Length: 143
Image (cartoon, rainbow, N blue to C red; front, side):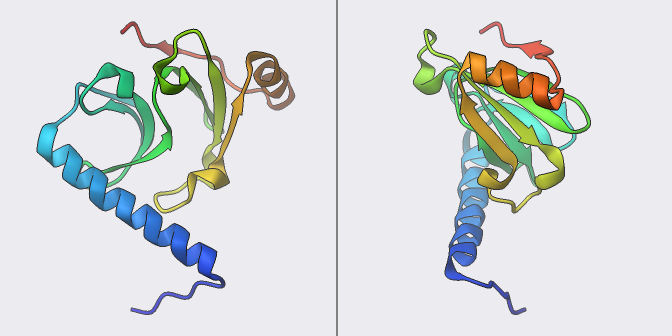
């Protein structure tokens, strides 16, 4: 099989995504999850060793998952067009960042920079929510 990449940055992105799948698969088969919550469609909230590692990922076959928004995710919501995600960067509970993911632009080997927007502060995210009609947060983590 021959891969046709128009430029080297796409090839690098593809290889990077492939490596993430391989490493994630190895990691997941080795230790299991402390958190594994299905959000909707191929999206999951997972944490491998600690609740502070909770992130949003895109599920692949064989229990592999490609990261979309890194830890520490504490709230998500969704509709047919978007996922909304709130997180504490680096586990700092005094700081919040907000993201939204455009589902129509996402796929198993899509670089997250194509489908994920953010991080936003609260005021900017509120403006984006009103402009786009983003869904509210429907699932908030208690841990």
